[in-house]
Image (cartoon, rainbow, N blue to C red; front, side):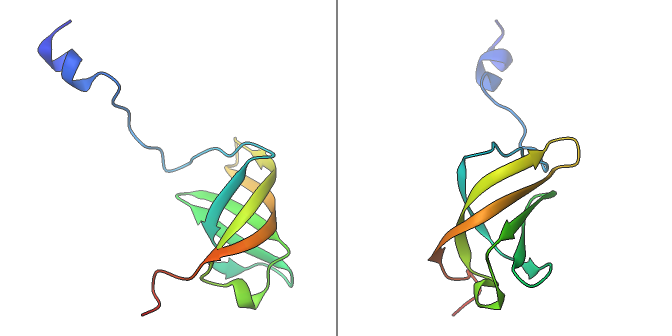
Length: 91
């Protein structure tokens, strides 16, 4: 193994389309609404549609349980569990 291979071992590139596992819980920012009780969280190019959120959750960090995920389309659905933080933009 060369010095360069040793140095780079374990390195990997981050993807802009991360996958989500059903039944896992993730913290995301709700960036927009898609309907009355559905928010959209974007994680790179992945879109997660969060059921059970409204205008009061916009730009807030929320905990979501992933209910389904389509890896080929990089979209998923989840259910709102709780608000865990404020926007990073508030001052």
